[in-house]
Length: 241
Ligand SMILES: C[S@@+](CC[C@H](N)C(=O)[O-])C[C@H]1O[C@@H](n2cnc3c(N)ncnc32)[C@H](O)[C@@H]1O
Image 1: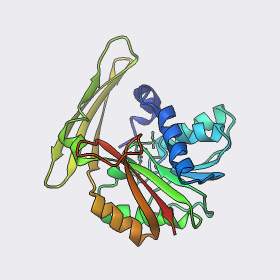
Image 2 (image 1 turned 30 degrees about the vertical axis):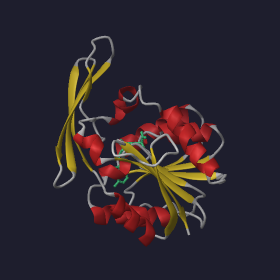
Image 3 (image 1 turned 90 degrees about the horizontal axis):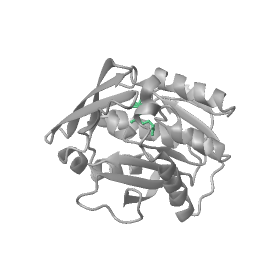
Image 4 (image 1 turned 120 degrees about the vertical axis):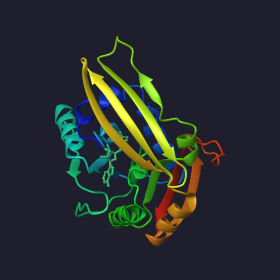
């Protein structure tokens, strides 16, 4: 996952409202009256949000399991003359050798960590990289999103250089979705199979509390409202004790 797709990731995601996501992160921080100087992006991908926060003056670091995604992130940072610490490593085991005043993980990244023991370690390792009082903010796709086939998407218009078709297959017993992703760049076909899990609120709360987080709140994404039955994405906000 996120290997062949890496060089085309930003083009594939051109319609994703990353700027709004960045503003929402800043809103959630302001709402908690937190003003971090240093921020860690866990599962940063090609660093789209990382870089926009670096431009705003935050001291940024990003970690991602996919070396090709980190290659893209580093290339873009050099091009933009930005100093961002990027690391290709697993969220469960990375080591930056310093702590940060905030961490976040966006765009389903924790859904991609399908094994609960693995996710627990990723959350614990993120906690280890945070100062006391520092918030952790992350989004999750919900089971509703998978059931409602929100992964079934396509853009096969001939006009764009990059076209794609995603088809999801959700198993509600295992809470696992397998998404067959096909995409075409200048007519050349590529494929990846992506696997996500719809973690429950209880599973996540247990992990956060076990890792030393408190003041856990969950929002219907991009609002300050409680999640609804039909929330397809939720944001968790918590603070390291
Ligand atoms: C949908 S992408 C989101 C990337 C980025 N956060 C964004 O908003 O564009 C999910 C990312 O999670 C990363 N990822 C999945 N499992 C991981 C793990 N165990 N440790 C670190 N990164 C992981 C993938 O490599 C991928 O870049």
